Image 1 (cartoon, rainbow, N blue to C red):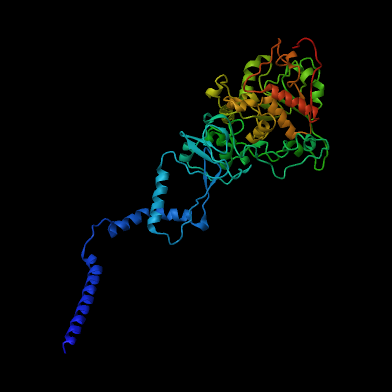
Image 2: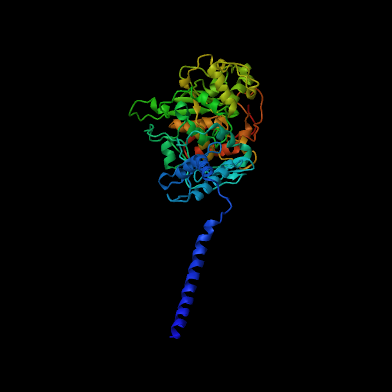
Amino acid sequence: MRPCPRRLCHLDQTIQGSLLLAVLIFLLFTLPSFIKEPNTKPSRNKHQQNIKERSPELLQNAMSQAPTTRRKATTHMGSVLGTHTRDTHPEATALMANQRRRAQTSKAHAEEPGRVPTPTGKAALQTQAGAQAGKGARGATPAATPSQDRAQPTRSSAPPRSPATQRSQKLKATNFKSEPQWDFEDEYSLEVGGLQTTCPDSVKIKASKSPWLRTLFLPNLTLFLDSGHFNQSEWDRLEHFSPPFGFMELNFSLVQKVVARFPPVPQQQLLLASLRPGSSRCISCAVVGNGGILNNSHVGPEIDSHDYVFRLSGAVIKGYEHDVGTRTSFYGFTAFSLTQSLLILGSRGFRHVPLGQDVRYLHFLEGTRDYEWLEALLLNRTVTSRNLSWFRRRPQEAFQEALQLDRYLLLHPDLLRYMKNRFLRSKTLNTAHWRIYRPTTGALLLLTALQLCDRVSAYGFITEGHERFSDHYYDKSWKRTIFYINHDFKLERTLWKRLHDEGIIRLYQRPMTSKPTI
């Protein structure tokens, strides 16, 4: 009987060990519930308050990152046309902590001074040293980000910017050491469905067959700036280019107020619109510059024989009819060239612009002073701008109080930029003086005639041997032509000669003589 108690004792020890192990396991799992941890987390009320405060932020963050509603935003540097999309696509079951962290990061970036979201495409720009500049721009001083697509040549869908955005992201010419080259630099507003010439030897037809011009010449450009060709999107696009090639550093309110007064031009090809439907008549134009080569030229009757005659700036006619003709169909000018001509040549008979019921006026807009001139013209007030300090008169006096806005045409900045980019791109644009360069008013007028006419003859423009002639045909004594840095006369001379040699224009030239003439 003794072995049994030993087995029972052994069994009791086994049971006791099991029970002890069970007690230890029980205590291991239940003991933490009796110990109170320090309260390092926000209370329920505080957590709810935080959610309430952050809910609009989280909602906006979630919606902006949702895969099915990728929001497009436009970032402007004075008006950058860039598409900004978020790359993060959170799942619907994302943790609240991750959402809060993303919201805090976004808020911190948004509140960082001078920080602008980096857009992709269409001349995206970055901020450097407090200045906005584009990396779609070549030759820019600030850094830039490459773009993936090009801005549209006509009206974009960029939304209007807030005043705060306009103030903080305005492009300035001083940001660039040479002319900036945007990805959409060589894209222009085009007229869709415009009139086409039927003249078999039109300059447009010749250009399309020329190995040199067929990739340069655009026959359907938008030529005129008016109320139908100005809106916020166009401002945003053109603000990347300095005047007269765009709106950089101009006052939006002033430009808008002025341009809104000009009625839309029904047909950009307004000379073709004057022909009978189906007519194959060729429109001939004479463009008359003021060069001394016209003095004693006796080409006045030849000039007047053209369908239309273009003149510019100080177009003195009285006393020079036999050399320069008498008719005027188009008069081209800038506010500077016109006011200076009235001031300097008033005693020579140039006291007002060419007048007539059929005369059209072509205003090349150089910058702020041109819009200030227009504002005074439209309000019939005296010019008070410091930019025109020498002219303290009412602009309408120059038009003899008979101005009609449907005959007063503003040349579109795209047209002038097209001329500069494709025909008169001076090396000055690659220097620190890039901001002041522009083609001469005569060059702008002659290239405008190529857009409007079928046959173009140029008189009084710079040619080989120009040094033999006085600066202007109306000079009383011989004056040497001065080459100013804001123009490139040599480049223009080369262009006119090549257009003449290609048969695109007929350039009036004089036989070589041994001594200069007035």
